Image 1 (cartoon, rainbow, N blue to C red):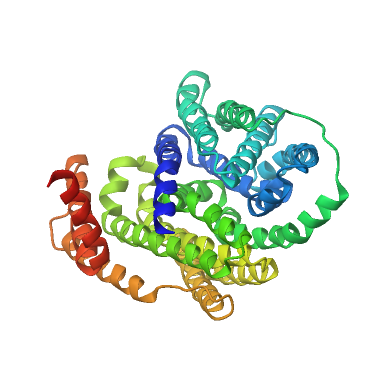
Image 2: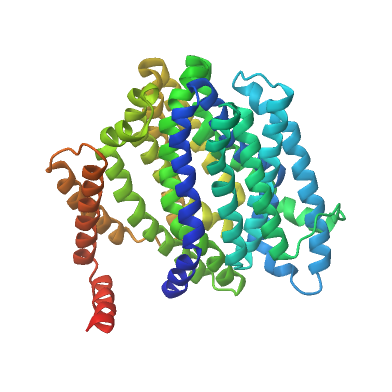
Length: 479
């Protein structure tokens, strides 16, 4: 089980690392090119895409990821025809949502910006959908091609496009849409998918609706838990306040998602393989193993960002955003890490066991706690207080999710391994806190390497099996 996860994780690694890294770098560049109000509009539409896509097609994509294997063989043609129709319906919804996304944050929905936003939403929807299809079939090359195109061709070229055509949201959306269109074409070609009107299949739709409809409501609550703070801040502090929040909040969420995706892309399809083979226990163990590996990556990164937030923000972020970002970045990273761990462990256990109604309840509690916390924080502590309130709500919701998954879904969470990871993080934190604060890129890089070395050494000490594995491999290679 662990060997399959490690092998597939390594194969997925280029797509999981390079794309998000480019997006992270581009978002930093945007803070230097876009005014806070325009930055807030761009980052909100990017965040809103997760919501519009959920309503438009993601519920169908999740059905495919979970049940695609059942339509192989004689039902292949029937399934592809239905998928073509669903992709068409989903794309139409994105065109409708484009002006609504702009109006939600007080932006002017002029024709150019609206068309650009619609192009971004449609192409992003198709890239994500067919990437999930490729992942359900372990088509790693096709998945990688799709994940490369959007960030590298789209986000990367948006910086050049703004320098040439002007720093406006429309320029960003159009450029990103071009890159994503190339990615969608590449992955569709690899999967043998051709654009088509398709045929609506009532029987398939009923089965997909039974599984996916609760996920729409669950996803709405999940999106509100992550991004509701943006709407609250925009309402309370205006478009400029939204932009100032979005730099730290967006970067912090991306740090968590980037780290999590290193190991999560391979894990869920492997768990699906096991549960479809009738191995319920093995499927849950696969999810739990992924959770342990994810915790081992998320925990040190979150603490590292908290310790180095000041120097990192001074080095990377434009001056207008620095004061707020220095406070919000570590809070957002922690909130993103906690929610990401919950999503890819307890929530994925619910998806495997088809407990989608329970996920809806869990995400409703998450959204309620998070938004109440953010509203109280905004009232008493401004933008920074809203971020702290969000974090408190996230922690409470995650604790509830873990209790439910361990008690009622029988997810075998390895608490002993988690405790050892926490001890290793404490050792790393001591090395960072007790050494001088860094100044400049070289000193920050050295500090990061020091923390990574101390954390790695502590992990090897605390996990004898891993230590033996590394020793054997090194001996075999260099002995």
